Image (cartoon, rainbow, N blue to C red; front, side, top):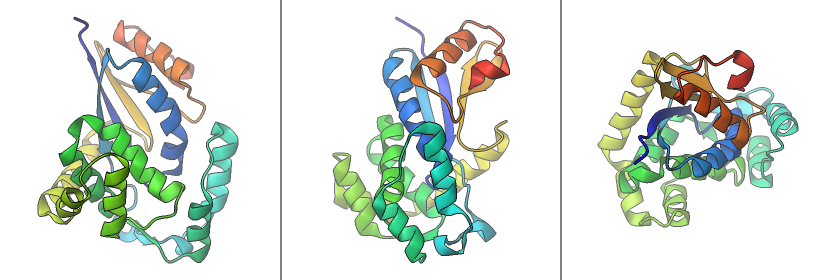
Length: 219
């Protein structure tokens, strides 16, 4: 039996570059499912004073366009409409609570859950404060929507979100997205805006075998 290597994906629902990185990451995870144990950690990009209505943030659509130009990953009309309308409040605490609520129902599908929540925003422009949105995300994932709504309202999900934010502070990551591979020489970060499943796999295998990873290879 192949011994699996642990990875931690530090992400945030409201990180546009995480949306751009997600397709490559999912391709990598599928291709290496027998070799990896992937943990998804929502890290808290927009908390405290950074919680604002999207209309108060500068350059949101411009950042999305840059991401698309670099990665080829598009955003949806619903997202663009919501940004232009401007009232949706972006709060990573709410998004992380939604993640952990859904995770409690399907802990083996963390990456799918993270993608589904980002899809709700970056494709459809949905407000994650709305319990009905969380129920629909659960339904799309094949989970029980009523159980998801109950978990979303439960204090345990909020506690997990806050604990995750504290844990993220202890990790040596420069920002979002960060994919850490725990190899023989300790955790190393791989991935970037131009990542592909093949590039991620090559970097992963080098770390797994104990090689030092040049900066260029990490991308």
